[in-house]
Length: 121
Image (cartoon, rainbow, N blue to C red; front, side, top):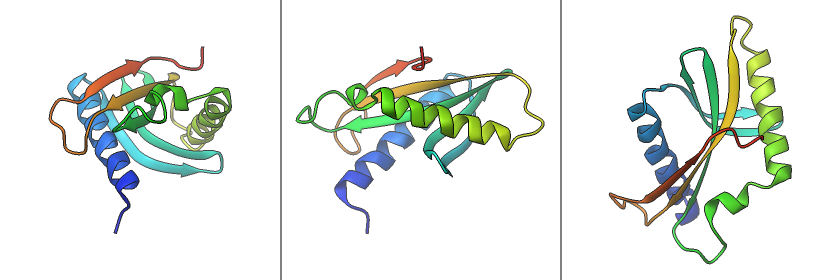
């Protein structure tokens, strides 16, 4: 059985996946493990592959969700994205890493969502 924290994370990823699809992206993969860490969601829009980090918080006790993505985490995300791309010999195009920050209660219908594009810059 999943812990509450795992349930919140899975719910947040589901919310993010729905948002990404509604924005016209094609979801390629979810929870991809690499030697550099896990990639929550991978999607494509045109010739751009987008790697998503999803951070979900049900309270502000530990700060805003986006504050959990520091320089070290970004470094791991870049490594994971590059590893994934290297495994796709036919991929030709651009790529970036986006962050989706979600604040809300498990199952909430209208959580607060912020989408930060290209967090590596």
